[in-house]
Image 1 (cartoon, rainbow, N blue to C red):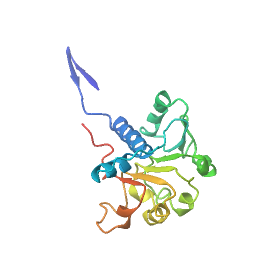
Image 2 (image 1 turned 90 degrees about the vertical axis):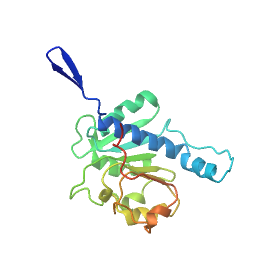
Image 3 (image 1 turned 45 degrees about the horizontal axis):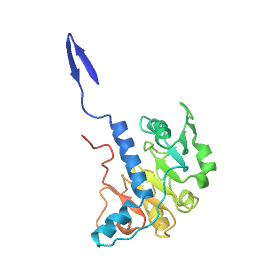
Image 4 (image 1 turned 90 degrees about the horizontal axis):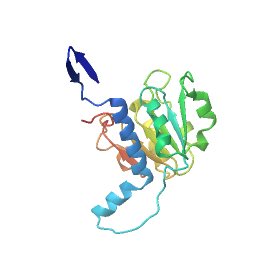
Length: 198
């Protein structure tokens, strides 16, 4: 951002956290879909093994939340023109759809990204009723507050080895060493760092 003081230009170089979080979210989506965790594990164990992973091209993505981060996903079409991106919000404003439409169509989405505030209406919003409807092989991403997700229900569903998840926030936070979430398959965990960049 630029500030004018007479003839001197002053700049705020700190990155827009909306863009930073969007960048991180896109990165974690690609990492999960392209199998980076598998390749990191293979590298650690000195295993040279080819495998075919998924691409974002042609996938259907639901963005839950239409704030400053959710709106950034409009730009994803420039990178993936054949990908369907639906943004959902409580009001259905500014190009988004009403959240009720998401509930009606959960099964169709390949990727679900959560970017909503925590309040009495959103606490435990994503529980086993939602997880049971997520399609096989889909990716669930939470970049929002940990309490929006019912962690016990997510652990149960991930252990069925049916879909993938990437979480930048969890409940409890910090996650205890003995928590079962650490051992879930098909999961990328990061310690609330999506907006932390320089």
